[in-house]
Length: 346
Image (tube, rainbow, N blue to C red; front, side, top):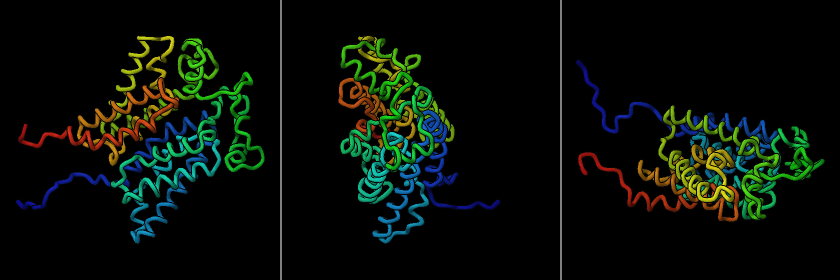
């Protein structure tokens, strides 16, 4: 009988970075399609602009560093960064917003630290925070879901608005069926509570349906389905998504039980904004997250609790970008105090 002798590690499958990134991209399709269905062609335009910009910026910097351009681009990480940033900004934001944000994510946050595997912050979320602070008007001008929009934007109108020719009035597409300008469900609820309305009174508006935001619940369900597929394929581990959902859900439940008139239900928080997108596709970035299993759970819980605190007591209605970046800062400390047990030792 012949035996083949090989050195460790004894890998039984080829789980390359490019394959992992491609799997994540494909698993994001259900949520992406739901977002395009409810918010129009602008989402597709933003994602395409972000991906093209990400590839060009990555190639430019890699060429300056005299590295192999083909090998770097083939890992698909630039495409994933473009997708995550493209679906995070308003669909009809001006073209230069997504280009500036994507260039910052690739050049400053990723390549300046040495490329994939060396960055300390999530590139897409760091770029999102930059854009939100620098261009608050453009970054908060979300359109109304097509189901309740008075003027849904078709492909031509989306192109005209994004590239600023023809009829570039974003407010035109923020009008609901009752003729009033609408914001996102998280924005609407936060503004109403600051004006003295109760949660139940705010949820009667057209932007809400059955206690959740119109369209947003389906977008979150789409990303949830994609996340569950990634768990099934073992592309990601369950610790961070469960930590994020548990942290946000428990905090939201406690707030709702204490004061239901001033706090939204946990279902509302879990299926509004970028909750499922962040829990499964953003927070699970292996480069910027904690490394041990227990550390990943704590990492996710920190993100979930921070999101709830910022949503209710901070200045931003959806806070995943800030929460993820703050958790990225905590990752080295988590790894220092929470270490996996070495085999054969307590």
